[in-house]
Length: 370
Image (tube, rainbow, N blue to C red; front, side, top):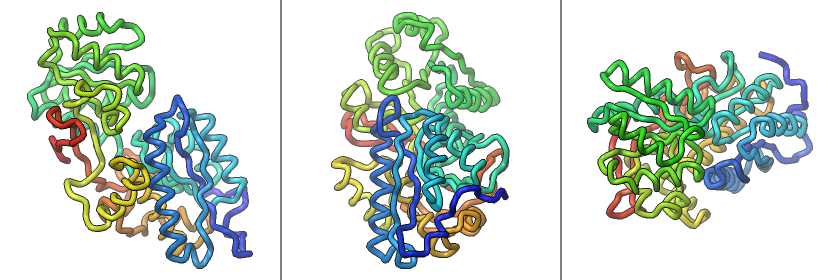
């Protein structure tokens, strides 16, 4: 384990706050709504930690930096936060951005607890400095592929944009479906008009179209185009990355946005802790909290437990990952080494495939659980 080159928060002995860095997409082209939910969860948990006495009497302070879905900006933020003496860095939603942050945290010797990003290869090489709460993409997207097969959808089209995250997801889907008699055809949204995309879906006899693209552009107009083509009335539109989770999706698409299955990292029923936190998040957000808000709360709660038990020294925090045992909003949180995953991973994150009910678009239906 490398020695951190920048000051550790442990060096502050004057009763000042214990600082946590927080990486959150708060401006475009970042997914701003996801960032707002993530920050709400992080901030709520910090308030609760401080109401309970903080970290050995010292208040916990969240130092927030907007990544705007920019990997270089995220890496620079990790540099800045390290120089400010944060004990650890937390957060981030976008996988490619979290990957840049994780690489920088590893290089600097700063613990990073990633809240939401799922890319399997979050770092190039195994690292002791990084842990993650969200499930690995390979696990979640294989569960999604099983849902497609169970629903009788075997001829899958994916409309994509250039991105390591979308490329990785396409590979997971193709490998998992091919072994079970399914096929995947890839359509480049940058090379096709909406009319040409619909023609290609008809020509390929696709029974499902998965949106592996950004939101709201180009996802929203693609959904409108496919919904408006009578030839495609029976096709299933899916969005494994979770675009329909947020109210912005429903507001943009109305009824057209319902019946589009996506991955959500919640249990079928929340326990008492999850119910309580969910109620407080709803009041804070003014709407139903997404799973991303719960991820934010769990992130700070894990780090607070680590800080109380192992202190604020960065190396001690990194050594603590295999010893974490914390009750989160979605179940007991423990980290382990998972084959093929380069970071400490919460292996048992609950995973659902859900959609917005066409009869009641504000209501979510659980279609499949893994």
